[in-house]
Structures are given as structure tokens and as C-alpha cells.
Image (cartoon, rainbow, N blue to C red):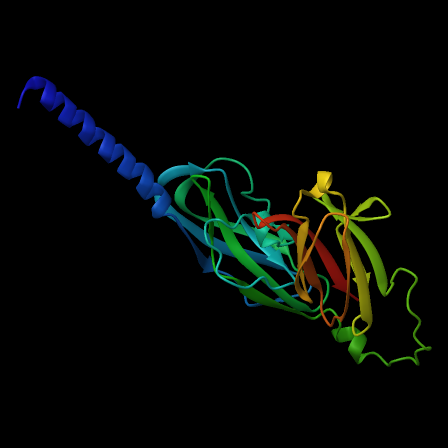
Length: 259
């Protein structure tokens, strides 16, 4: 082997080792839950520990994402936090430089009302998203004293002024709007029939394909300047998602909160 051939061989060997190292760092990363409670009292402190494994490197973000709504399924590496749709996330390691592999622990407050909290651990490694499975924590205790107290006769229930059974909502690539004001959530009464009309704005603001809506009614595509009305009854809070139909890109979410 000539000197030039030998030099070329050494160069190619170094390049292969370097590329294999980079590829391995992305492929070998994982998120694993180490310790988490399954129950907690209302307004109590929740501590969750998880591990981000992989080749030694620095990552910019890892957190616990949580919500009172379950977002089931297996999340692959293409699912971003915005795609996932969880309402909250821990701030302890949300931004910075963190060397892995290592374990992380974050704390946050439980809701003030009884119910179920759903959560996942998440990390960004080499610009790729890694998720744990979804877990749940039962929240209890807030209403105990009230239930034990002597109940007083209740007057005939009236629908609060803040609630309505009918909404007209405009939508474009920047979000949902009521009377030209950006809206992220609406409130309805559980068990009451709800009617929502979604109007998609013009093609300059949504694109030629319009928008695709996914909610308790299923999936419906609405063209630019078009509208569609949906009627349904809810027993628990849910999320409506608007997507670009051709790219399946999430545009925005609207939370329908049941009171």
C-alpha cells in the first residue's frame, strides 16, 4: 500500500468512526421514568424522576408534560411538544445545557380539584424528540370536608352568564378567534348540548387546502371561507385541534372545559 493510499485509508476510517459516533448518539438516546407517585392530595407537591440515556453529550431541554386530559398513543421522534398538546410542563430543565446520561427530578403542584393527571417525560437529543409512555396520577381530597358538611338546600340551578351553549369561532393559521379576539379555551356545562360553528378564514390566511378539525365529532375538513357546525354533549374536558390537511401540521388547539 502506497503512502497516499494509507493516508486515504486512515482518513476514511476516522470519518466512519466519527459518523458512527454521531449516528449512535441519536439512535441510542432514550427517556425512562425512574420514580413517580400514583396518587397525590389536591394542591400537593408532585416529584417525578426520569433518566435521559445515550452517549455523553449536552442536551438543551427535558421536562415533564402534564394535563388533566389523556393524550394516549405511542409518540415517535417526530412528535413535538406542540403536536402532543399537553397544557403544562415543568420548568426545571426546560432550557439550558444539561449533560447526559443523567437522572432528572422535577416538582410541580397538583390541581386543586379531584381528578386524574396525565403526564409523560420528554427530552430533545440532537434535535430529536424522545418521549416516555403516558402515566397517570389520581388527585383526591379537595372535596372531602365539603361532602361531610351538612348540605344546604340548593335553589333551582341557573346557567351562569359566563357559559353558553353556542359558539361562533373563526380560525386561521394563527389560532382560534371569537369576535376577533384570540381564544385558547371555552367553558361549557357538562351534559348540556353544545353547538360550535367554525368558520375558516380566507385562503391568504390558511392556504388553499383550508383546515382540518379533529374533535369529539371526529375529523372534518373545512375549505377557505367555509364553515361547519357541530353539536355534541360533553361529560369531560376535551381538546379540538386544527391541522393543515396537506402537511398534517398542527395549527393550534382549543380547549373545551366542562364545568
